[in-house]
Each structure stands twice: as structure tokens, then as C-alpha cells.
Length: 118
Image (cartoon, rainbow, N blue to C red; front, side, top):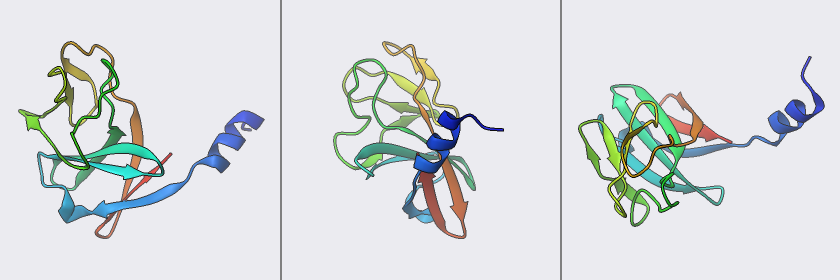
């Protein structure tokens, strides 16, 4: 069975409808404000959606100056503050000064709706 802590965490998780599948183009990333948090949704391959914490692991700067498009280059999201890069599929750091990956957030697609849970 699950521990009391795990059961509490599962009960506390909320699901948020974040965007339509058409809002995130293949190969791109977009930042949204959801439940008081910044979330980046990517579509690294057609029909595959991933979500991550929207703050750079280097110094915590948001990956976009405002809610909307995140700059991507060759499959990496680029932080506007110091140029750190993060893989759009895994969230792994691809370019310094960041060394740690972005925190993953559960993303789910239902029809044309993308939702996240945390």
C-alpha cells in the first residue's frame, strides 16, 4: 500500500486545463501561469506534449519574459537571462550555466485539451 505521505500527496495533486494542442506548435515551447506557478509546455514531436517548471535551474529566472512563447533552438529551450538551455523532451540541461534539469510536471492530452497535474 501507499504510505500516508504518498496518499496525502496524491490527494493534494490538482489537474489544470492549460491550453489547446494547437497552442503549442511542434518543436516549440510556451509558458503559462497555472495555479500560481509558471509551467512550460513543449511539443517535441507531433502529438507528444511535455511539461516542466518554467524557472531556470541556474538562478530561478523564468524561461520567458512573459507568459507566451519560449525561445527554442535545436530542441532546447533557452533561458533569456544567461542563455542556459534545456531539452524540450526531457528537461535536461543542455547548455550552461545551468547544470540541473527542469522539474517535470505531469502532462496529459484529452482530445484537443492539454492538462497538467501537480
